[in-house]
Amino acid sequence: MICPICSHSELKNYLLKDNFNFFQCLNCRFILVDVSGINLSDYYNNPNYLHDKVGKGYVDYEADKAPMRLVYIDLLKKVESYQSGGRLLDLGAASGYFLDVASQNGYSAEGIELNPSAVKEGRERGRKIKLADILKNGYPDDSFDVVTAFDFFEHLPQDKLKDYILTIKKLLGKNGVLAIITVNTASWWAKIFGRRWHTFLPPEHISYFSDKNIRLFLENSGFEVLEIKTLHKRFSLQYVFNFLYRWQGIFLWLSIARFLEKYSHLGRLAIKLPLGDNMVVLARKKYD
Image (cartoon, rainbow, N blue to C red; front, side, top):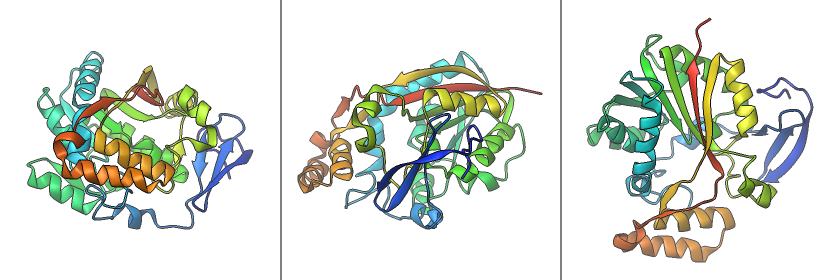
């Protein structure tokens, strides 16, 4: 096995969780999950992912994403300081909550998504979302000024990471900006919990970057890294308890999440969790 970030050939066994083997590169510290034994497309065709009842997805995607609205607006303002163009593509758009935020802030925004039920729901809400794999997207080169990839890169299999980043590069026009939100293995929260870190969730999360190796990955792929900063996310209360159940498997957390879903005026309360284990990465496409 070769590290997809630095091409180093020495990887160590890092963790076994839910019968999935995690490996870590001894050189750049990138962590990957071996998913060769499963069909990921089957996993992402789950029709209940946006409205989950068993603690494996979102309780209610739209409600769970709403607390991130101000975070997204601030990030779009930062993107605009680097790229004034208004054509935006959101990768892994789900039902497209973020597309509304982008559209309301001056962008001509559309998304691309693998999950048919999510695409259907988004289209019913009037959003422009293409049902497709990004590697077979059908867009001409240089179609967008901005590509956003929020909570996206951790879902990509290691053997296709380079294909995805080169496809994204083709989609971006001159000086196009890529905005990423992903988990950070070098964060203090990740270091404290180590192998018990809550974001180790195979086969959903299977590629784990640090701020250093994602810089290496982007620079080696023809991008100029503009900035990398810690992100503190905002969550609905019902999402927090749903995620606690996924992390710890304690049925009480699932019961509370279901209670909060029933009493949505409580469940949709937004809270900011200062975990610091997510990062925002902004990078600009370089021309050869």
